Image (cartoon, rainbow, N blue to C red; front, side, top):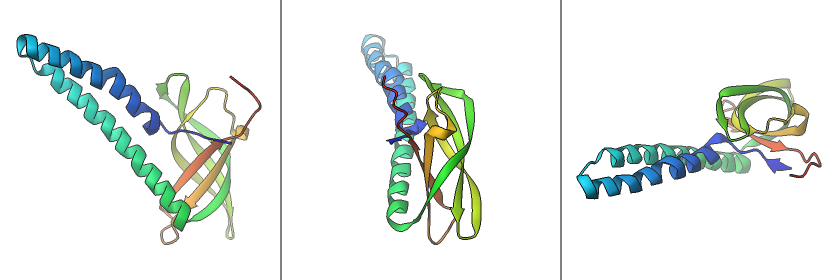
Length: 153
């Protein structure tokens, strides 16, 4: 099984290498040639924006590792995929998933954060592990896996 990535893990690289760094180098040239700082300030805005996404990614990874060690884990099945069509990264579709998990008290439904799904991903091909904080069940995180379908690209 393969872990499904979140937009925060991928988007920071795209913003940094497509906008931040190229605009920064163009800005350096413009400062040297004409003393214009506007492009460097724009580049710094994109760099800060991408670093914010990287910090969000690191925070989510740290939260997942902590809940793996100290939390309660349930296996879940994906019952619904909720696409977010306003955000597309390459061929990926950004979507949230609703997962059903079984506890001692009965079945429960939980909604995840955003994930990058392939256009042909089906809910039957996805598997979820849900981690809860032992002291506060409101603090949770879902780790989404893509099952091996036998397709090779």
